[in-house]
Image (cartoon, rainbow, N blue to C red):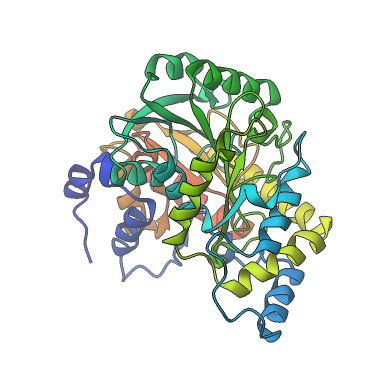
Length: 412
């Protein structure tokens, strides 16, 4: 099927873009007559590569939960108590205070946790501050909740730090939340303690809540350790969103959490708690047997599994950056420190017949059977997001094809 790239570019407005939607169109544009193996570096699902596998204890925990025949019925709408307690204990390891099971609600992946957080905070005339580049699901959820979206910039020359001056200029009395994604998707950044503290102080000054998207929590391999935003919960109320998906390599299990990291108690007021509980009454959580497996998974996964995952991501990130250096029209302003992706800038002046990032990605898919995500999908036109959580040999091959494509389209 041939895709008209000009039409595709024109029709894609920011409010309608989803990552899965645009990747589906890119897959459709691949030439069926091309005998090259399709390599996708467009989506953060490492399970498609044989080098990334979940820990054996996770699989055994699920099997045992099923075979016990104790978890075939409905779970409580907020989640199984033992699951909520285990997640509270797991997250509390990195906090200066202890969470309880009452602070934890189980969701179908982190995506549902995003929707819950926006649903709980939405109000008439409200607005929300989102990072640019960022994760487009936030914008999509905001549109359904009639929340105005205001974008603050991340600064590539400063390791994709938050432009706090931009945040202050955008916020007003109707700002319901400031969203922080750390470790960063799509940029691969990991924020230092002092920067997170400044974010917390800024949010306090603006009298707003911080939504901390930590789905890539602990997947760090640079100089900065992972610091959860909840560390600063005594400064500003924090809603922590996370899941098993990335750290345990099980995105299809759809086990996420929505956590009120708020030692000062704003989210513990009876009316607030009741509202959250009622909203969860209309949601469908993860399968009961998946929930039942969580305590064992959190307690028994060995550190060697996490270390192996980090080593693979570090190696893949290095390969990715080394190969990018060989492509003149692509520039990486900041080597990733964590997560599974990075952002690179396109220099279109070096290309002859490429109009923008969408045009680049559609022609690349058609000619080379390589899928990259256009930066437009995450808020930065004429940039690309590359997911490096891939088999090293396939990653090298994909980027060699990108180099060949770029040479073929180079301006004379």
